[in-house]
Image 1 (cartoon, rainbow, N blue to C red):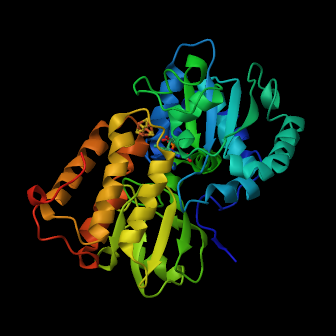
Image 2: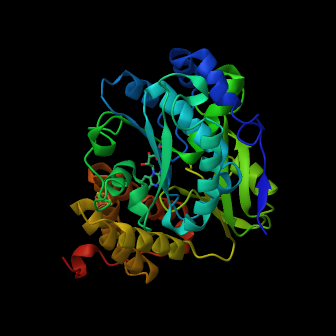
Length: 401
Ligand SMILES: Cc1cc2nc3c(=O)[nH]c(=O)nc-3n(C[C@H](O)[C@H](O)[C@H](O)COP(=O)(O)O)c2cc1C
Ligand code: SF4
């Protein structure tokens, strides 16, 4: 049975359509300033300021604009968006409607993870009711010329389609292969038009910010991470579930709430850091222990090298293969990890693997390749007692390639 913890912002309660009504009263410029001043940062992982993104799309001169909600939720250990999608979809759609109002978009898409197909009847019912209530469609709530509607499109199970440009390719009906950035979606998004693309959780914060104000929002969290965060807590703990916590909470505090004892490690998902007990005083926020939403707990009986292997295998399967550092680098790291597991990896070869990791972080085309070495690097660095290196130097050993 999963737990749910309702915190001070996202699940704080707000009257239906109060955010949209408030936005219409305030006008575009004021809403944009409020979102910018709130310091809201994207909740999909990268933490880009939502206000900056929205201002760029609002300022763009274009005959068409789009709003896209990223509900791909493919990161291993992440299941926080599904709570919003199933329990608060209306509020998330309200966030998209406000984005459309300030940016001038007339069409929005919810890009829904294929595995969440069963949510479609509910989501379509909510959209239907919103059309009846006049918050979707033409002249929304009587505001002449404010026209906007939302269509749901299903993904097909590729992790890389959660990456914003891969997602846009997929929306356009192409293979979900990430594009070079720049240009960014704010300039060249869906079908080449300026596009506001945000995570489900980012959008659900919006009605609260518009109704209750930037100052109220900033009173939660830390200086660089305003507000609260939804965490999907899983693994070796008594109370796995979705928790809304204030940014700045320590890992130690969170583990206590989740009923996790005898913990060896905590990971911020496959693409995040994996840390040991000595770092459990770190704070969950963008400037310290950053997570898009995943928090996986590993108990004392787990073998961390196996965890790294598992994550690397996931990346190997999910790499789209477009660029060399990611396509070729991940299998090399995986082979290296197998050597480490067998105690056959010399120190100088491990140095080569770290150097390769750096190249992948710098030279991969998208975030998948860039973050794929994270579990390898952090587990090898933080769990040194779990493996032994070979004493034979690399030049004395024969490696493939
Ligand atoms: C491989 C990969 C998968 C991603 N998956 C998701 C996802 O499932 N949901 C999401 O919101 N962002 C995901 N992102 C981040 C998006 O590219 C993008 O930064 C985000 O949707 C922007 O919204 P935000 O600014 O509100 O966070 C992923 C990125 C990468 C590199
Ligand atoms: S980094 Fe990996 S997933 Fe991203 S474009 Fe390159 S090959 Fe594809």
